[in-house]
Image (cartoon, rainbow over all chains, first blue to last red; front, side):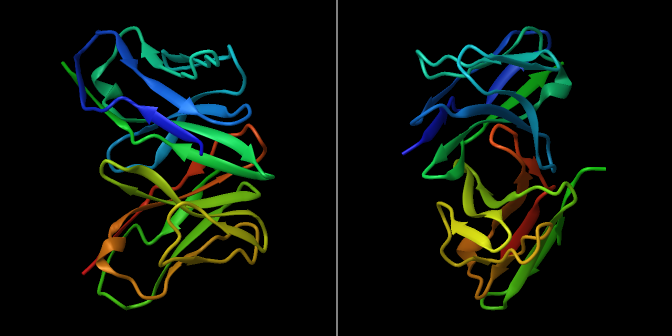
Length: 114
Length: 112
C-alpha cells in the first residue's frame, strides 16, 4: 500500500543553518504531495504542496520538489530561524478505487537554537 | 474566516463512558476525516467521509464510530472508551482532488 517515510528527528540546528528534511514515498498512480507544519499546541497547517512531477512547492522560504524518479519530496530551507521550530509532516494524497487517501509520515521535530 | 472547529479541546474521562467529539467546518468541503496522533506514529486516519451519508474506515477504526448527516459536521463517537484511545485527535476537511486538508486545533483525550 501507499506509504510515506521521513527522517527521524529531532533535528537541531543553529539559526541561519541550512535545513533538509528527507521524505520518500511509495504510491500507485500520481499522488499529490504536501508538507505540513505543526507548532506546539496547534493543529497542522499546510506549508507547501506539489501536484505533479517536477513541481516545486514553496512558502515562507521553504521549498520542496516533486521527484518522481526518486519518489522523493525533500523539504529545504536556506536559513532557518528560531520561529521555524516545529514538527514537520510529509504527506501524500492519492486516488485509489475512487477514494481519496491521505497518508502521513511520522513527523520530524525541528529545533532551532539562537 | 475559514476554519475547522473541534470540541472539546481537552477531555479527561473514565473507561466505558460514552463520549462524542464534534467537528464542524464552514468551507462547504465534501471530504472530512478524523486522525489520531501518537508519539512515533505520526497521524493515522480513523474514519473519513467523502460526502453526506458516505463514510468509510481509515487505518485504525476499531473502537470508533462516525456519522455524516450534514455536510458541515462530522462527529467522532467513542461508545466505550478505553485507555488505549488516549491520544490527540484531529479533524480535517478538504475539497477537490489536489487540495490540501484544513485541520482543526486538536482534541486531547485522556481515558483513565
